[in-house]
Length: 97
Image 1 (cartoon, helix red, strand yellow):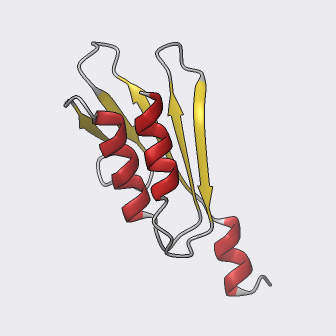
Image 2 (cartoon, helix red, strand yellow; image 1 turned 180 degrees about the vertical axis):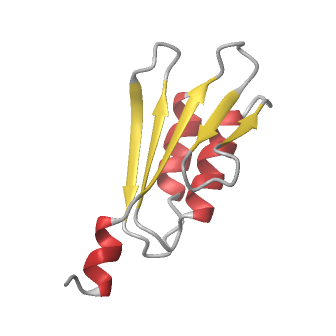
């Protein structure tokens, strides 16, 4: 039987930030979201979506993937749920968009 810490390390929250097909912002997609996806339509939509994922997964092992229009992963962030803010990843995303 797995110990609690080991079991928690194996369970990941996976978030994906994808551009919408109608070009009206970006979607944050995850199985852990209550409705499966959140729509961000403002100018800094990707940064806001990543910030949401970082905030709500701060105590869990999580993977955040940012996709481009073609569906390719352009950035990935993985953290172990150690309450760190992920601010460096958020600044890097903001700088590249």
